[in-house]
Length: 506
Image (cartoon, rainbow, N blue to C red; front, top):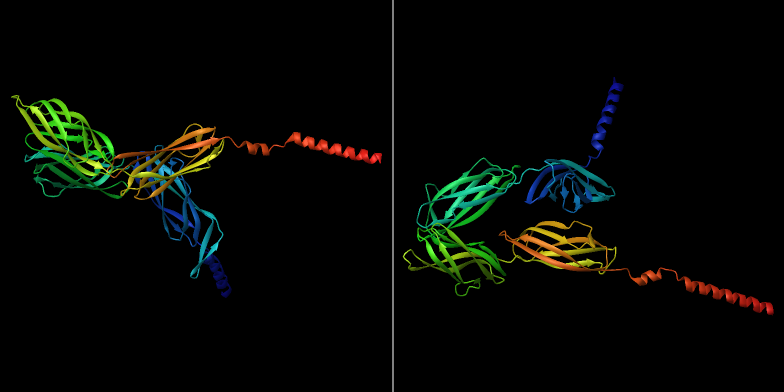
């Protein structure tokens, strides 16, 4: 009986010991995959992983394998060290124009050494390997909310019903939207303040409408709108909008500028829309535009022959507004409209319209590196530019396009999606080319971006590259000089014959 118990204990211990003393495997687990930004066909994918193991992996580099999409982020992504239990987030820019609805992907993290804890310290061991994790990328839609209010013109002191439209112009659903509306410069009729409404789901290309009755009390009625919603992955978003409506007096004549946002340091063409909401026709109308004393804006022409404006109609005229560099903010431009009434009497109306001057976005190319210079034919040249946001606000939707002549063959991609660049932040963008022919060529870097107001800007930088044939001196030194070698051999032979003949005579 004792022998049987002893044998049973040995068998039990032999089966338990491997579980107790063996090191756990290194495991990489993908805990979350989600889209966080979008610009056209380019989306930004965030992959959240967690590492399980008993050793810290060192010199780790991450690779994303995506057979059904184009990865724009350069690989590998340097990770460094990963401790057991550490959560790691990786971000990749992907062109999703050819991405399938359900795409398989794999994340690989290579390392070349590990750190093992011994007491209060670590011991570095040479051990390389790869952590892998496979997952699915679901091309779920990306919701995009937009807000509008109509009509855009109200009559001061009169009851008006405006329609607030919440539109989903993305390709993903807006889930459980909650809209909060506050109104300034008007009294809300029939509802409390703030106005709150919503729906269960707003699918792509669908809209949610809300009628609001108000009485305008001032010349400008401001709607402050907050939209809270979830996307299809359950992630929360909150967006804020401010929309101003113009409230006119009972005369029913006013002017609006389109576009109302103009760039600082530029000469902008805008259209002035003259509205006649009154009940009488305006005959032989003439518009005179002038700026207030001290204003640095210049508007040309200052006098415009408008002609007749029928009741309920509007007429557009074009002007140019010159804005000095450095200006920003809201500016009023005054006008005086002269016209003849139905009894041929001359009537003049004074008013003003508003333009918003957007501060110049200060993205600049701070440095250029060209290696080598000049470039030998069939050689490779690396061109790197560094861009920096010198402004005080972030720049968005930054795209860099590289254009080169046929004689400089690109060896890398010629477009880069940078996304957002914070204030005072530099970023380097490298490109490489193979020089095919001798000559002087120009490489153009075109950088497009938008400021916080959504105004588009553009910066272009041209770089000259000189391509030369390989140095002739180098070619000559590598070739043996055959004629001189033959002459030297002949001279040695003559000397040997002369010595032999002289000795023979002696």
